[in-house]
Image 1 (cartoon, rainbow, N blue to C red):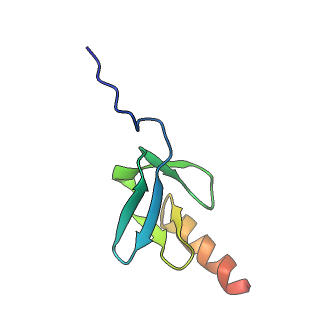
Image 2 (cartoon, rainbow, N blue to C red):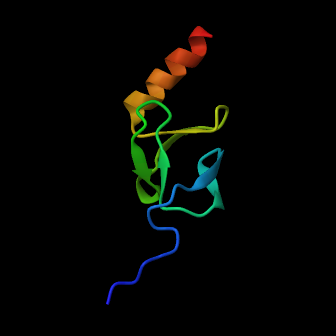
Length: 71
């Protein structure tokens, strides 16, 4: 018997904090602000507190930072 969690396959709403995040609305993933790829919550390592965005990897985080610095 397979047990399905009510939040499986649903995008979570997250409040990004310094070194941590708070789940505002349950889900199993967030979406990368740069690539649009889904990021499982257990794999979420990169985000911006200032922009409240998640990133799939360090390269995507760097691209967002460069874009933000350009204005």
